[in-house]
Amino acid sequence: MNAGQGNIPEKVIDVVLQQHDIVDTVSRYVHLTKQGKYMKGLCPFHSEKTPSFTVTPDRQIFYCYGCGKGGNAIKFRMEIEGLSFPEAVKIMAEESHIVLPEGQGAVVNPPNPERDRLLQAYEWTAKFYHFLLKNTEHGKAAMDYLRSRGFNDKVIDQFQIGFAPDRWDTLVQFLTKRSFDLHEMEKGGLLTKRHDSEEDYLDRFRGRVMFPISDRNGRIIAFAGRILGEGQPKYLNSPESKLFNKSRILYNLHQAKPSIRKLRQIVLFEGYGDVISAWEAGVQNGVATMGTSLTESHAALMKTMADEIVICYDGDRAGQAAAMKTIPLLESISLNVRISVLNDGLDPDEFIQKYGADRFNRQIIDGAVSTTKFKLIYLKKNHILLEEDGKIAYTKEVLPIIAALASSTEREVYLRELASELQLSFESLKQDCNEIRQSMQKNMTDGDNNDKRWNNGRQKGQVSAPTLLPAYHTGERRLLAMMLQDAEAASYVEKRLGDAFNIDDHAAIAAYLYAYYAQGKPPDISRFMSSLHDDRLEKTVSSISMMDTPPEWNVQELDDCIREVQKVPQKRQIDKKKEEMINAERSGDFLRAAQIASEIIALERQ
Image 1 (cartoon, rainbow, N blue to C red):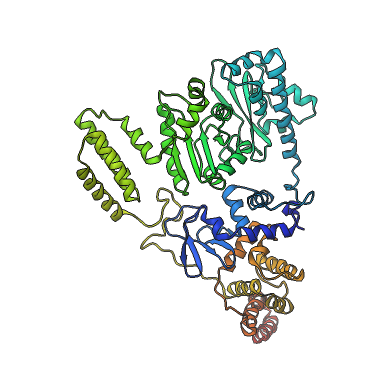
Image 2: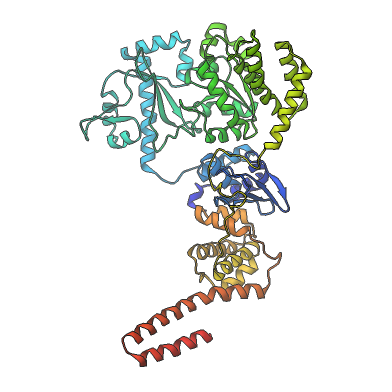
């Protein structure tokens, strides 16, 4: 068992790979089209206009010719979601209802004492702040504030809400008494240094209601602190650390997972208070970003768990503008998106307090509108529709949105609604819409991600010449490609070449492959890659696997490749001898130069 597998038995990894077809796994994130025996699409790991991302169903691997990323289904989930190998296997096992064996199946990351100490410190700090809130005079004002927000004791306990007193060293003393290294605690985001000192530390959070932030497994990794009373910033998050990357973390995901998986739906909020209020109102599939815009990592993570996202942002202009920005990111990965419409500038928490849980569920969650409907509502606010100029300007803004819809039925529904609302001719609106649609189709370019730059020089007239590899390099790759497909080919190469590959990575792959077949395992590229646990080697194997090789190996081709590989040390020896001969001639030792020349001739004959 490989230590990098986090104590997960190989048989579990094999079953996970069997249950997660590479095409199904990748298709949740990438639109693939069939091209011969391959599937192709635009790479999710870098921006490109021409598809270079390739999936090989019969070998159960992916490889991108643009950025070089490659691997099996587990590796794809690791890359797209930022997971460790054990985390990816555990999640994929859960999705396929595969039971990890007791004890030996526990997911364990490689030992990291500093990380473990930091996790311990965060857990104890959360309990400490929670105790101060509920049981001390310090927390009384914070508790009054929370009760005024409608938070009862049950929900305060459920979310482990706490309070950081408005003092400089409350947490410093708490951590010092428990023998934590204060420098580690500062790096981990719990403390901060005095401006005038390298040695003295202060509490980072003071006078704030504290909301613990957990990772998807429920371990506390950060805090969000809301100031009690007036002051700036209103919310203060922990800084990014070994534990906390806000572009990958969704607040409350660890508690929301069961409901999300059951409903295949996520309700996305802007703030922690909204998530907690909605939870009490019965919406237990709610999450929030960490005071930042939704990122591609957030979207990819949500895609693994849900088919539909309901965006429930604040009803003010800022909240609605943020929702508009979020729509394209979610729709680009084929998630169904609906938007909650909150009137009067209310946020979800305020709506629940004002109108109650039933109306919130019925009107705001169940009544969330399509993205097209939301865009029409949002843009309408910019125009005075009682005036002719306002009607015309509004129509010019919304017709391209309707024209972009793929369904002719959908387009007709919105056009009829628009005609009725503005008292305009449906036929004239339909004609204008069709003209816009035709213009769009003419101007469409191949690919996507056009606003991003990565290798976008690969356009018409600017295609770079392919890099030609030395003959021995190609020979080594061909040998490995045939060895990956056939254990007998690997045995033949092992007897005649062993590990005498000229490129270190190729020698390492060959050694792993010999060991893999020695265990009696059948040729299976995806399974073999799971045994490597080396990012560079996995990429190299993915690249080699994409080579076209004969369906069955033959001795002549193997021998030809082995000869090319064996020539390299001899050629290097000849080059070295030539250098020695030149030096002998320069120093006047012509007898020695002649002797070396004879040696060179003998080597060249070989």
